[in-house]
Amino acid sequence: MVTRPAVLVTIGFAVALAAAMWALVLELDEPASSSSPPPVVAVETQLPSSAPAAFDVVRIGAHGDAMIAGRAPTGGEVSIFDNGSEIGRAAVDARGEWVFVPSLPLVPGIHRFTLDSGALAVVVLPEDEPGAALVVKTIPGEGWRLIQAPPDAAGLGLSIAMVDRGPRGSLGITGRAEPGSLVTVSLDQRLIGRTRTEPDGWWRISGSGAPRHGRHVIGGERFDTRGRTLARSEVLWDATAVLPHDGENLVVTSAGSGGSAGWRIVHRGDGDIADAVVYRSARGEAHPQESR
Image (cartoon, rainbow, N blue to C red; front, side, top):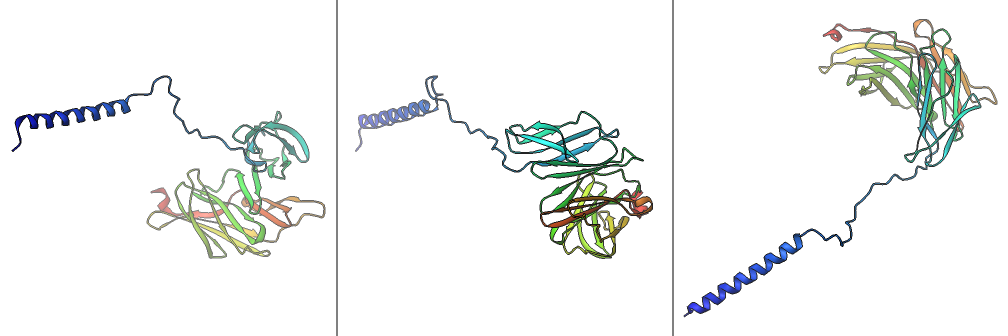
């Protein structure tokens, strides 16, 4: 038989034990005193860039004003050359980025921007249309990339702006369309691939097995969400490139005819040839669904 005093003693012991545990919890939850060491906080640091200097952006205004930007190893300096002559230098910030603005506008003609790393960007400023600047750059092992193109004069809702052929027979087609559009591209009516237009209105499709000779038709088609054709566009591409002469590594010539006339840019580097044809406009047709 359990007596009343024994019960009270048991309850008192339990209460005391609970109070002790609660006090321990409060002690653990109390904020650290001012004398306690500060907590360790993880800080994201910018690792030094070790990639060779390269062009990211080359923008040319209607009057030849230029802005050139790119990447390079942090803490250094890049020298920018135009047709072999140094036109300025730019410091590289802690993020590995640099920006350079020439003091004078670019004159009409061909400008070959280079860096000490061998990076190359080509600017074509037509004398008859200064606002229609063309800018392309090379990507090692991949060929050309279009940075800035003349305004599309076709007004089709779909255009093919550039056909480029890189090392090892790669083929790239770049164009414009409404953002988010589904676009397919063919070579001589043979499907190369399909993609969706980026938010800025540009699209690009890459393939392999690019022909080296002959005249070919590059065709593009834009569809709506129901698979109906909204617009078609095509350009005539001459795959026979004009190779640079011995001692030269870059040739820029006119290409095409009529309203689609543009430029052909051929570069010899790393033991291979990369060439691109850039078009002012494409021929094609817009379908009635586009206006709906």
